[in-house]
Amino acid sequence: MLNIALPKGRLGEKVYGMFARAGFECPAVLENSRKLIFENEAAQVRYFWVKPSDVAIYVERGAADVGVAGKDILLEYRPDVYELLDLNIGKCRMAVAAPEGFEDRPDRTLRVATKFSRIARDFYTARGRDIDIIHLNGSIEIAPILGLSDVIVDIVETGTTLRENHLEVIETIVPISARLIANKSGFKFKTEAIERLTGALEKGGERE
Ligand code: PRP
Image 1 (cartoon, rainbow, N blue to C red):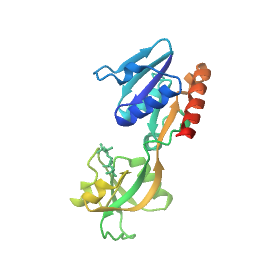
Image 2: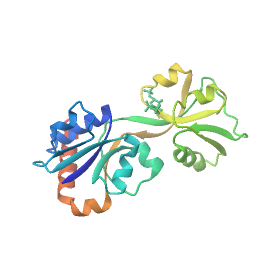
Image 3: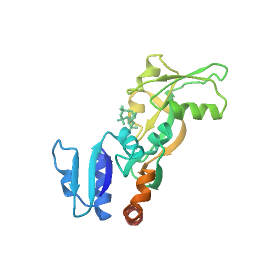
Image 4: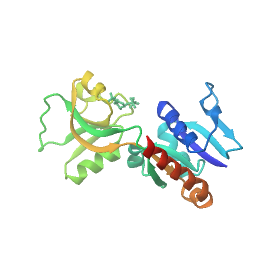
């Protein structure tokens, strides 16, 4: 049985569609219920819905053999997992944004509000810039508006959230997309199934 952690939400439904086309079907997954675990014995799969930011934890600890996580989560938490494939969906970017017209003062410590402290720290350390990280859990965009920070490091997809809050991208840090990840020892024991899945997803991706 292959245990698969899906990120709850629209992205997860898309991911399930790709897995089903790859031969790992379990139609009950899309049932509109509060159930979180679904099994299809015939196809030898068990799916479960988890919070997107938790997928890597399930996979790292072996509760799931494979799962799909955003590159943002992989960069931020560096889970000890195999990254097998870029699924080319859930595309967005990690960026630095600031109020329109913002002018940086390189002689001052930059105050950075973010949910992605490690990504922000790595980015500024690489350029030798002193920063003060203000770790927040959401609604990052209001931090510079209220004077809590100078800039933010956050995910930008359409740019609507930034625009509506009069912020703009100053710099892109890294492009983000959804990745297929696998537990390291699970990969050893279930190599055949995981490689079949990876290969089929790769081919499906080319067709799209
Ligand atoms: C993300 C991110 C931005 C928004 C960007 O938040 O933190 O707020 O999406 O998308 P846009 O460029 O299309 O406007 P998300 O909705 O994932 O939830 P969060 O507020 O919990 O971070």
